[in-house]
Length: 556
Image 1 (cartoon, rainbow, N blue to C red):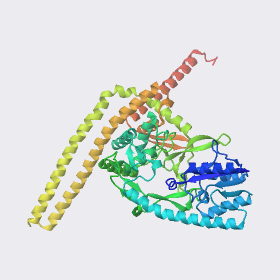
Image 2 (tube, one colour):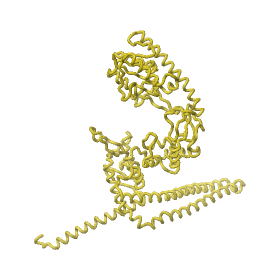
Image 3 (cartoon, one colour):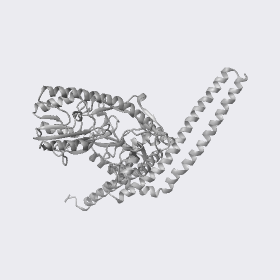
Image 4 (cartoon, helix red, strand yellow):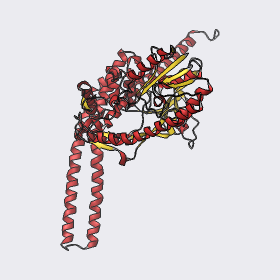
């Protein structure tokens, strides 16, 4: 007879004597050997079906699901467990599984309990024990949850298998300890974000360095974002943020798992100073303010690095953005191709007839424009002095203008104060006071607005100098190296520096807005191309006139 041995422990069982997987496995193998039965297991390299760290209430366990698959294919004659509750603590699901075994002619046996599924008395005993197993499981929840709350309040980390990046779990003291190498990277991530780097830029930095994550994979944007939001890095434990809703399945009710939903704020427990902090509180909350501000101001979220024109490409018909998506072009080989489509397609209330365009087709047109720019970057070198002047002198003028506006603003406030003092001493009547006060307040508003505009202008000028230099370096590298050797992120950033907007209609670029000084390079390139075409036309015309002059009229 072929026998399938099933063993299971949950996290709470591991601390209880006699429930370890090794004890169950050794006991059951010896038990089967006594009866000279044949042990069967379809899991490679395993003698038994074994689930480590899974609750008995849910049937969604990998080894158990494999056992169910083998049962339904009738590869087994008998299923044997150490105790009935190792199979399940959910009475309804337990009885359903036993019913399925009976319909397939497969037996079930508990090695330490007298069960016989072929008799009515045995079935009654199983139902009784199943009820007690479910009752014990519910009581266990009632005992464990308050214990976990007390553990959190003492600073004990709940979830030893998943210590956050930058920490390791110390089982003896039940607390998190700093992992020096990972902590250094966490500090770098916070520092880079405070200094103006975005989460995709930070992820790209570590991706290009080849820095592996704890599991050996690469860094990605969400991983960086999760680190920046996690209060654990300032020594605070946050527990009970979410829970599994057992009444709602994933994937619209068709999935095997349950929905992981956020708890009410009143149920979340936060305990400060539980372990050594990696990030200071002041620095952490500065980053939270930046995250909130950037979240409100964000326009484009990149999901795939192949879409280099995300955030730049726009529809000429409805002026909405074009978004990237993958389309299967060969269902047999599952080959995919990148396309851009107008985002109005995702809104039922917007009617737009503009066509989608392949990434390859639009990239070809865009790189033609960039090629014209790159061939004319010598203009920047020739006009070096003029660029320096435009980068420095106007800023000095702006600073001087700002100082003058701030002086006028101070004087305005002084005048308002003086006017109020005159009015309070009854030296002018109410009508004259209101009239003059309104004029001064209007002047104050205008000065405030002028000051803000000049400040933004100075900031924009300083940023544009750095962007100009960075892009010029990129174009020079582009001339000496191939396009495909540049990183996806570098190309995407480069596109957003060169172009303000690119408008597409009927799969063609019909209009574009370029930033300076690249607009000047492109316009100079167009002038050169126009001049070259004019010269070619004139040359052809001259040749035709010469031939016409040389050949006699009779021959012509």
